[in-house]
Image 1 (cartoon, helix red, strand yellow):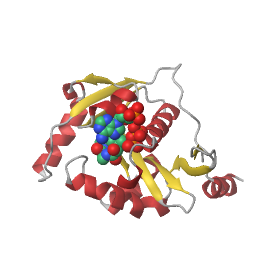
Image 2: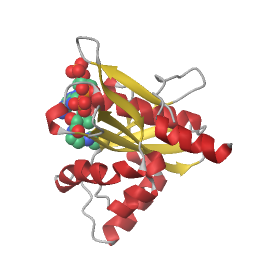
Image 3: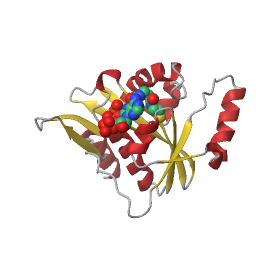
Image 4: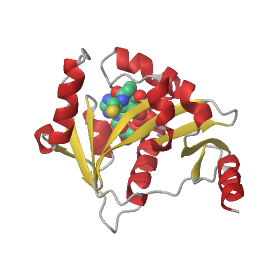
Amino acid sequence: MPLRGLSDRRGSTKQVVRRATRADASQILELVTPYAAQGLMLPRTLDQIASRIDNYVVAADASGRVLACAALEEYSPSLAEVSSVAVSPSHHGKGLGTQVVLGVERLARARDIEEVFALSLTDNFFLSLGYTPCTVARYPEKLARYDSLSKAGVEIIPKRCFQKVLDKTWSAPRLVENTEATNRRRRIAG
Ligand SMILES: CC(C)(COP(=O)(O)OP(=O)(O)OC[C@H]1O[C@@H](n2cnc3c(N)ncnc32)[C@H](O)[C@@H]1OP(=O)(O)O)[C@@H](O)C(=O)NCCC(=O)NCCS
């Protein structure tokens, strides 16, 4: 499984950005729950995260602690949302949010998804990643999901919408290899 190593100012690798595994699910839950409580993102349960773990990218430190996450939420074969972007408060402003979003974009491109969108109260973050402001009305699939969540009693805080087209010339940094998961896949394949 591909991953990407991040270096600190002295050049030693401190964090990796990689596809999430089942073992990360509870840490992802811990990361997103306080932000969901502030209305910055939709709440998730452990079951929801675990069952969609293949859609998550995380940044983790050398001990395996998850410092940041983001998820790809697919709406159609060519459209997906970049959701659940969360960085541990102690690690804000170090580029980890950027790296997990780039990882999710890479995942999207690998799945032939051509357009991604994100909803956020933090304008500059997605603008710095090359996203363009747009109206959420462009995505009736998202409005329909908001509608059903709202009917289920989930409070929806209006956010600004951003979109990015991942055309054929687009490329994101490669992610680093997750040895354990790759070996498991090789064992299954072999
Ligand atoms: C928003 C968030 C994901 C950014 O992660 P991060 O790792 O701190 O961001 P980065 O270091 O990669 O920053 C990249 C750029 O985003 C912008 N940015 C980051 N955080 C920002 C903030 N809170 N407000 C405005 N701009 C911000 C900056 O322009 C920054 O560029 P710079 O380094 O040149 O200043 C992080 O602050 C977070 O987890 N916030 C709470 C959850 C949230 O709001 N998630 C977004 C919902 S999708």
